[in-house]
Image 1 (tube, each protein chain N blue to C red):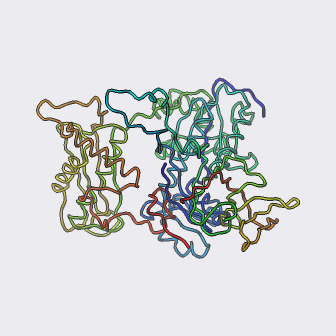
Image 2 (image 1 turned 45 degrees about the horizontal axis):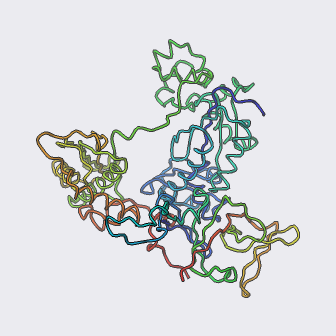
Image 3 (image 1 turned 180 degrees about the horizontal axis):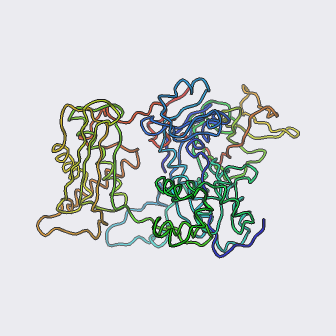
Length: 149
Length: 427
């Protein structure tokens, strides 16, 4: 898996995604003495590929880096890598990337009456209500968070 | 418009203001404002947002002449960011390719699709496709449809020009076909060059309709067979097929204008080595070897100063994809033609005699320089490292380190294709 550095906007940093290079992890590793086949050999038929798990639509998947604490309650810490799938239809309750008045932001999508609300998950931040004056566009749905422990 | 598919049904899908659209995907503050993208070396305007067109920025304008204008009209100006455009293009092309049984990538932002025999109506299919490309990638596209590629091109132009068609226009069996062809200047017909336009003008041929109505034998005589085929395509008879698998290139050219005039031999040697490295990478990327190397250098003909241009080529005893062998050849050629005391504007390297590595001709006299497994392993390793960590992570020292001669790209948006460790930090 390889990511390419891109732009940083409002705490988000975009990375290109290149599906051609796979990071393959073997299902399990067993040292085998030459000449004696492992009894497990017949059961190893494939390797796990993280792209397969994390990237459902390669053409529509972008990596984004979160900065700031506004989504800590959703398990997104500053510096985490977000997998964003533009092909996945975002709905209320989803964590989304949205463009608000010319900036990209990560928030949880909600509704208040007929209006969209973008809610942070941190007590120090206020929700953003989307009004008719807001220049607003849903950019994509966050499908995974990659966090270094 | 629920017409059934005719036997031939070509679509041309074209990204709207592609380079500007790419920039806008990642920087929404660029929406609704004038944006332009400049060519290599920040030379001239090569892409404009509709707002930039509206304030009067022309295609191909030299950027340095318009600095004041750009500032007064708050035009956002970008150097070209081909790493980004290439990646976004691959995404769009891949979606387009999946939407039709056959497709031809025509350029970085255009593809022909063969829609014959698809179950839904053409209009529905194209609208769905257009929305899908936009939602998945953020890139807006327009689609023109017709019974021939030439007519699909024209339909695309109409789809783009008139908002009421919602980005899709189908010319198939169109009741006003003749009006449309009479509206289109012959210069805008696909494949008709400027010189032909002048010649046609002298014969009173101004529009696509005039051209389509020319007698076949006149066309064949004055415009060659390609001209005749273009006329037939305008009449709705398909002559140009989709080009499905582009043949691997017969020659590779790597050449660029310098960011500033170069007069030292060392810098010329460095730049030529850098171009050879790039061309050799491409060569290995397509699994080929080259047996002919050409180097050319020239001064700036637009400047009032001493002019010099020269080129020299040599044939190698055996085809190779080995960077050091090619650099050595290019350097000896450069040393033959380089003359001190001139301000050089441009240098370039061309590789030809290209054939697949697996079937290359072996010389009877010499062992090929890189049948040596160690060399091949080294080249593979070099390419893998550069693939993984970003172009030019590993490079030949002959290509220079400071590269003061390299392209000027002062206003490039953040690079999308670099390595993890090159990510800038933000608070």
